[in-house]
Amino acid sequence: METAKMDKMRKMQSKEKETRSSEPETAASCGENTALAPERAASLQEKNGAAEKKKGVYGVKIFNYKLVYLLLMVLVMSFAGFVVENLFRLLRDGVINSRRQILPFLFAYGIAVFVMYVAIGTPREMRLFKWSIFKKESKLSSASKYVCYFLVVFAFIFFGEMMFGTFVEWVSGVVLWDYTGIPLRFTKYTSIPTALGLAAGILIFMRFVFEPLMKKFEKMDESTAWIIDLSVGIPIVIDWLVMLILMLGFQFSENWWSITL
Image (cartoon, rainbow, N blue to C red):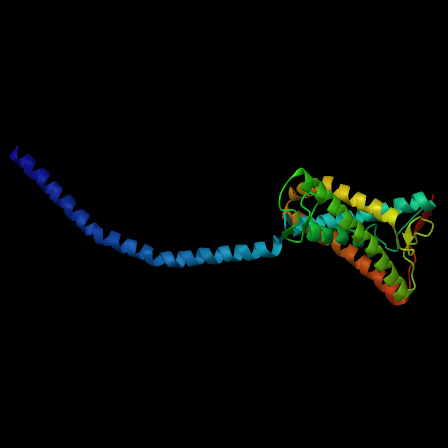
């Protein structure tokens, strides 16, 4: 019995020695980890900074939506502008044409919608850039937003058409369009009926189409969206610039094709 007790005592003493001998190693290991902690933190911070930088370049956000998806909207509205102008010309003159450009896109329409979104948002928000015009939400304020939005868009179209058309004619002698024959017109470039119709169309589009369409765009992979933006957008901008240079610099304003129906 005494021999067994002595063996147990020896085993316990040997375990205590092993534990004591391992303590410095553990402490040294902890010290090494503590020394490495700042280096690891710096490395993580550097990686996060690089990620944020990349996000800043490719993930620019303008109010509610990323730029990459807003540019898709510019492309869609550029095509829609081409269709709307030709529908109007078809109903009035029985003719559709290239609208002085090679591609079926009118960049001015796309950029106009982009500028309006940046400046006044949608009818539901009706802001002036980042400042809310209507602070409190009520039935009266909701109705006022729509009225205010419509009036701002109407003024934008009415004066914008008149100034741009007059400027181009003054510089190059080219008459881009002519509202002669339409009642309540002011100069050949603008009229109350056309401005009212376009303002109503934009109000309806920005209220019922813009936001749902943007949500559809947001489901698209960003890389794919950027590829579409660049591969389609760059030719559209080049086509538009060529048209402006030919028109303003060389007084060339012919349609590349025209179909009479």
